[in-house]
Length: 289
Image (tube, rainbow, N blue to C red; front, top):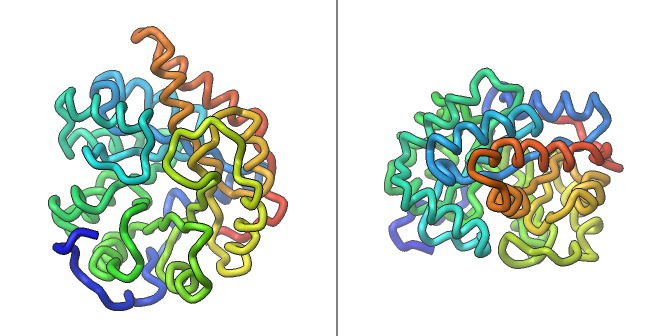
């Protein structure tokens, strides 16, 4: 962890928005339709800002949630596919204003927005400023894969003040005491990896994933999202049987990369529709916040 990160004591419990967010309503709607919600990941500004906005517009018509990445040059959780996409966005001139523009562009779309951000760029931008600007643009929450709960108090306070959920990525190795701390501070959902390691796996899902999701359900009433390593519609269908939110990123980017530049937005939407077609209702649903 970066030594400049503030806060090393236990964060206050229950730091979630006072009122349901657009993301919460999205999950209620998906549950009413007896299916898992689909979340698709795309780095903001990829492959460039103009094309990114077109892709996002088409994705928002097919997916329930847009997980919008804040491009960063040292992503700890991302494999080569997302690393290349983020690097392409940065090389094309990405700035935070492009992220905010992307969120605002989805304001009237059917999809809700979560931002996936690493802590260093968030900290450099300013925690309170980031939380305020993201919320004002229309984001419902922020996924922070590299922020330990032990160091999260300053961000949690800023997110609570702005009305943002904070979504934590929970490793299967997390012990019960630490999991309880995460659950007490998390909002929106918990994020469970479908495979160990970084994003972009094309292999089978981890055999212990159903048991891990069930363990999370015994620890919290928050919805459970599952991502990292879902590479095919068949795997998305499998995950949707146990997850409230099925999250796909690298496979979507591969589909975009394989298309001609003039057809990338349609390729993204087609892939999202293929994923959505097979989604099931989770076997053990929970009430959304």
